Image (cartoon, rainbow, N blue to C red; front, side, top):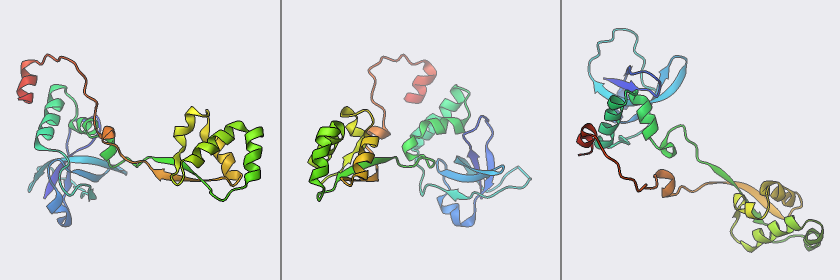
Length: 210
C-alpha cells in the first residue's frame, strides 16, 4: 500500500510513501505521519491511500503514523481541501494552519516555575528580610500563605517585577523550594473565542457551509 502525503511546505505536490505492513491498519486519510524528506524527518498528513502508484522511482517508507485514528472529521478534511482550492494554498500548509498547536506533534507542554514554602525555616532570617529586603519578605509571605499548595511564580508579577529572581534569592536562603511543573491545559487553549461579526458569504462559500 502507498500513501500520498501532504507536507507543510510551499508546494501543491503530494509525496508518495510506502506504508509498512505493521502500519497499514492505522493508515487513514487525515492521519498525521512522520516521513523522511531529503536529509531530515518531517510531519505531514495522509491525503490519499492506494494500492498502486504511477511513480516508478525509489519510494521511501513512512517512519511513523502519529494517530491511531484520523484527528480530522470528514467535514473538516473537506473544508481543508476547499480552502486549499479556493485560496490557491498548498493543502499541507492549510492543514498546518487548521491544526491547533496544542495537539501538533512538534508541540511540547509548557513548564512553569513553582515555589513552595519550607515549613521548618529560620525565623531569624525571616525577621531580617522584613527590614532589609521587604520585597523578598512580601513574596515569601504570599508563598507561605498558600501552603500546602505551591505558587506559580508568574502569578507573583503583581508583587514584584522579576519574581523568579526574588524566588531564587529565597531559595538560596533555604526558605522555599523551586521546581518546574507541567502547565495544565485549559479548554480555552484549544479553541477560539467567538467574535460577533456579520459575514456575507458568496455563493461558493455558502455551498461549502451548507
